[in-house]
Length: 249
Image (cartoon, rainbow, N blue to C red; front, side, top):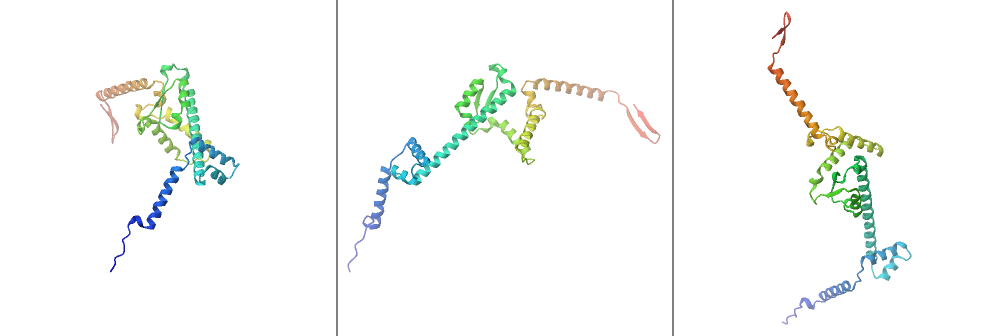
């Protein structure tokens, strides 16, 4: 009996075809044109102007339509992020300006002005925002990444405000703003905070906290002395029996 010749993997027609396809794909990737960012933007803008069909533009540039639409999506997302960042920077500057006007900080000496503590959001990292703080002579402190304790007080206030606002459903934005303003006034001027000695933030900011605590301690000492004098002094008790009330020394 004669034995059939054994075929190796390299001699298989299927294996040879797969090897050829892989070589063709590698050649296409190596010879594929690489477009810098400026060139991609130019191609996308040509497609947006619609002076030529997308298919014709892709044939002329030597790219697939799927690549063009991916560039177009990235271009739109980048524009949204830039617009969102500009809006955040404008909002941050407006908030700081409102705080400066409310506190009268511009009338204070530069060495006595407060510091701005914030996280690392895009609105606070912008050069325009830093220049704005430089004009106001306000020192900007950014918290360390992944260290939420730095801004823990304001984050806790946001949580308290959110819980209070969620008690009711506000269908009109003006009503919600009015409720928020009322709670902020209560929080800063009428609500006593245990963490700062049972005084209000409005007492701490202008430096009245120590005077308030001193007066409270004096009042406490006077109350304790009166209580001691009352307990050590002669007392009269009134008892009530069958013959009526009677005072016993």
